[in-house]
Image (cartoon, rainbow over all chains, first blue to last red; front, side, top):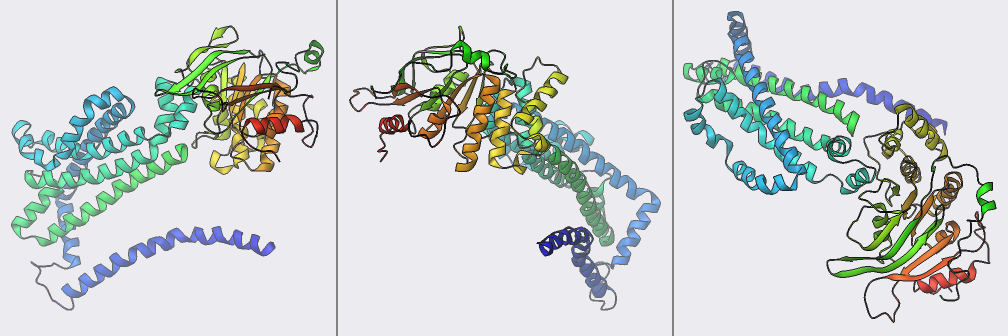
Length: 267
Length: 280
C-alpha cells in the first residue's frame, strides 16, 4: 500500500516537470529546420540569396524594417484588421446562431438562406465588395468578418440544437424558461463547441486578412508579402510569413487561455 | 387480483398517526392528486386509458407496470411535463398546470448540470421568490438530509451514481413540493445502493410528509415503500389497446417494513401475476 501511495505521490511530480519538457520537445523540429536552413545557405552555399536568403538576413530585414518604424505599422494595421473583423463576424455569428438555434420559427425562416450564403465560397464576394464597399479599411474588415462569421454561426447553431433535451426538460420542470433557461442551461452547455468555432473563426480571420491585403493595400503583412515579391526581397517575404505564424499562434493561444478559463467555470 | 387485501383502504391517515409524526420540515402542505378518466394517446395509438383514482395528501403510491405501459406517461402528466392527456387531473383542488410548481420531479437519470457543483445543482430547485439566505439554509438542510454535506462542492462527474441520485432528490425537495414525483429514480443503481436509497426515501417521507408518486417496475420496491400500489396493465380479455388500472391495492403493515417479511408473499405473488410473471 505504501509503495502505491509513494508511486501516486511521485506521479504528479513527474507531470509537473513535463511542461518545460514539452516546450523543449516542441522546439526541437523548428530548431532543426533553422539549423538546416543555415547550413544550406551559409556553409554549403547551395542557394543564391534571391532564391533562399540566410536566416541571418531575414532577421536583418526585420531589424531594418523595425528601425524604420515600418514593421510596427505593418503588424499593427494587420492585427487591427483581424481583431475588428473577427469581433464583428464572430459577434454576428453568435447572435444569429443563437437566434436560429433557439427559435424554430427563425430557424425555419432563415436557415435555408444562411445555408445558401454559406455555400458560396467566401472569396467569391471579393469583386462585389470591391464594387460596393471599395477595398479600403471597411472592405477588408468586412471580408474578414465574412470569414469569421460562418464557423461561429455553424458551431453555435448546431450546439444549441443538440443541447441534451433531458437537461432542458429538467430546467423547465424546475420553473426555468426564456432567458433564465437560456443562461442557466442552454448557454453553459454550448460553451465547449462554441470555443472550437471561435478558434476556427480566428484562423479564418488571418486567412482572409492575407487575401484582402494581397488584393489591394498600402500597408499590412499581406502588403509586405506582395511588395517583397515584386521587389524580389525574399528575405522580407520570409519575414512576413514568420510574423504571420507568430501572430496567429499568439492570438490562438490567447483565445485558448480564455477557453480554458471558461471551461473551468462551465464544463 | 380481485382477492387483493384491503382495496382502497389508505393506511396512515388516522389522526393518532398524524400526531405522532414530527412536524414536516420540507413540505408545509402535502397535496392530493385526483385522476379522473385520464388517458393518453400518441399519434392515434392509445397508451393509457381510464385511470381514475385519488391519492390522499401524504400518501406514498407506487405506480407499477411492465415496460411501456404508460407509467412514466402518467407521472409526467401529473408534473405538467406533458399536456396531451385526456380526462382531468387535479392537484389539490385545481387542475395541473404546465410544469406545475406544486410538484417536483426526480428523473430516472439524475439530470444534474455537469458544470455546476452539487450545491449549485440543488439550488436550481429552489423557488424563485425565496430570499438568498433562506435558500442557502434550506440547501444546507437538504444536503444534511441526503448525506452530501461534505460533497457539496464537487461536480456531478466526481461523485457516484447513488450520490448523484441523492442530489437529484434533494433538488426536487428544494421547492417543498406538495407532490413529489419519482420516475424510477433508483432504476439505474446497483442492488445495494438501491436498498439504501429506498431507506433514504422513507426517511425523507417521514420528515417531510409530502405526497409521493413513485414509478417503478420493481415489485419489492413498491411493497417496501408504498401505502398503495397502482398496477397498470392490459387485461388479455380487453378488446381495446392501451393500459388501464389493473389493480389498486393497499399494502398491509406499517413502514419501515421488514424486507424479509413473509406476510407480503401472497400480495407479491399476485402482483407478479398481474405483471405477467410467474413468481415461482
